[in-house]
Length: 286
Length: 286
Image (cartoon, rainbow over all chains, first blue to last red; front, top):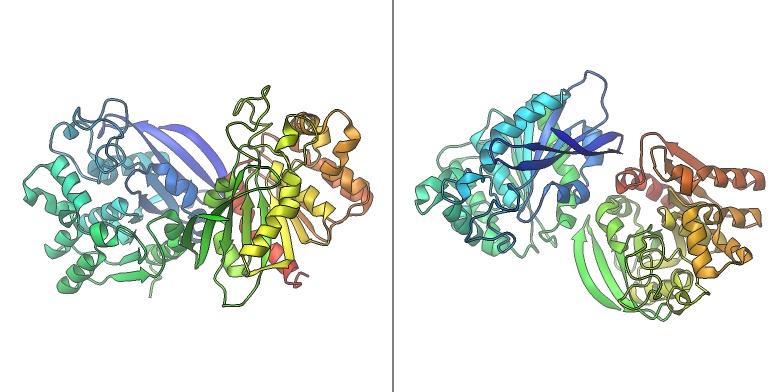
């Protein structure tokens, strides 16, 4: 692991790091905020998965999470959204031509289809490789006490990874998540491209399908802005609400008047999400 | 005035606006955050002047001021740092060749020397033109109740504009300000370029010289990071401390261990500055 930068902030340390990933066969960059803590103390961990076009940097600069993490004593980890590099996309999808496929758009899946299957293994990266790297390099991280959140495509990632790993994550939240990629244009393109035409293989990457097939989480919180341009066509929050209601999965889904899809929305509710996770991570939630 | 964007955030509205300035003869962009408020209610105003290379966007994205402004009921205005455009710098200083002179580096002066005197009138812009534009377009702004802050070159701007206008600003704060441009390389280059070789003309743009010549402010707060690479060579906080002590000007100057010159530092103490200004703006400070 290489340290790219560290900055003192809100009494803790905001770091940016990189490493060569065995999942993606590329150099991957991520950020970690470690709040102030006593020597030898261990702290719970909150993962934040970012949305389409983002890197670790967007939430690190605009997410306004450090004050709340310092107050709650929670480590905040922001991975990248895909492998990156000059030669890692398929010949038919040159870099930067599509914002919703390829670089910046890993959709937190393990791709099975060429050319994506060479590098696009973001599921394994988040589920296995990066947690092991954190364990090895951040001794103050209490890996028995984790939660997960994310935005848009990263909200999809948080919900699906959280629902598939209920023993690892004590709570799941999301900001304007893609709740059912099976049922929206972004998701159909990405899952079709990464996983092929057999839709049966898509189900483990769809939060609604996971709920329908019996996956459960202890605690789920979603905030969705009502002025979000992607709500009707891509995000479709109501599908998750319906899936949870039908399955008896408790979920707090809040529709926020006036808010759009931007970090101006995310940052407005970030502190509430962190306090909510903090209560569940520390076992003090009502 | 043109509206470039508005986003709901922290219960208020973060806007970005532009207008054609009569001071700079260019289009100028600025941001205004209006916190949630009752219809007809007026709110105090905090100006934030940015540092070298910055536009309105840096603090708007990274400053973490909206939560505190929403809690305090304070309007936050972030102007640009200079006129901008393809043809506004002198032939001898092409765009983007120097980060500490020309575009992004207006130093909040009225330039008297060619070629800068055509456009670089940031003092008049902040002291006269932009307040009038705010008065005309933001009826909820209580222009009888203003405070000013800023970072680095913008900390210099906040201190000098604040000290020259004690009736307008109830309180002045700064993050890692250039306290004496007369006595540092950035300042000598900029003031020499904009104002010419006669150093007598520089004094009204130097916070220490203003204090020495009798300017006073009711309340001054400065935060300075001790891991700031520019502290010894450019910022020289101790010169302001000495000038205030010699003149009997009260000032709270806090040296913050471990913090550097970045927005990771500014955002760490932004909420405290806003609460401090809020107390003075509302007359409730101890």
